[in-house]
Length: 536
Image (cartoon, rainbow, N blue to C red; front, side, top):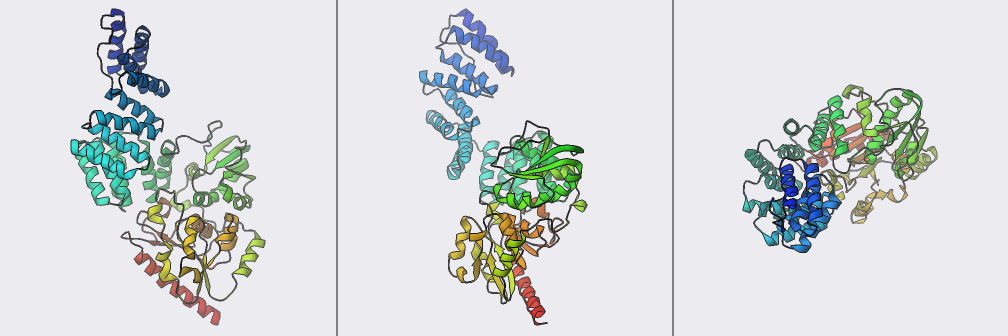
């Protein structure tokens, strides 16, 4: 709730004005903001220059999410009283709620100039700096808040988040537990503790924390989403996929993208058109395209809208009547469904994951081109070492090319880079350029990548879309996974129900050295078998 102080207006003797203010403050304290705003609006008509009335009206409007009007009120207060700390703070909150973080920060800084001992202002300024990716300044703010009030639970948890993002899991856990010791009903602290434990590889404990958060705040979307991901990682697809629907109220996914048509519930819709909507990453589209074969008999026409780089590959699948780029206008349809919701509406379980591999189709002419280009003796291995840098977990899943160096001198193996994007430049830093053939310049889209992959004997990759391509083609694929691997790779397994030809190499203690050692050992054995087969 925004801050408002009941007090006499500048026109103290105005009985009529007080008759409007008094019930307004009473309504406000009771949380009846519509009635409060109406009273303050009538008071403002009687005293249009009174800063106290503007402040009260702005506070009521802010609580009604009428943010543009609230902003006007607080700016009018500050025009008359530039050091009015409550107005500075409330205007900062209004701007923050509109994602105008730079402006919000300036008002919180001004408020701290008036009173630097306000722990709550240091804390919210830290939150704003976090939104601006000014993480060092954010951490400083949280520490200052705790210097003022060592038992400030919100600041403890916010500082814990900063330490988690630096992989300081033990320290982050301790801070979240301190916050919960102060306020055991702090749902956000339970959720953040769960996230910290998950990233530390303690999934079962994390799931229990998510449940605690949801018990305290059933509509906590982030906790519900995290619970969904945790259950999916444990292999409980029915329960996990239901909870995973909470993603539409979190982060950048605030609502379903197509609100002008019905969301498909899995019921037959013969003679009508269903649109599959690619909502997330490139690998997700490749992985979940398999469900189209189950959907097709239930609909009259099936169309897909996905990223442009996938269009040519997806258009080769006969199951789709049409494929559109996400840069194109949204095609007409009778209903739609985000692709990641297909496992829920189709009732998928771990035992019924469709794994009819291969399910991608390759341009035969391009496949012949790569077969000729890559022809020669030796085991042909493709490598990928980095994924999308904007992925939330990329700091854990991507590696430096130099990490793969122990593999590159395995005899009898020829290496081909499938790495695209800015990280591809690492290949041209000596000594790697002489050991690996760079295919990236020709990989203009994923149809081309699939054709190149089809000419290989093996793909070694971190968790990227290329690994999904190789797995969906049925090619032997060795994927390197961090301790806190994505849900789809489950936990502890060396195989994948999604891709039968895939072998999983997992970190155990946040170091890649044992993973690379196991890859080298298996690559030596594979190369020896390949050489023996050629000799025979």
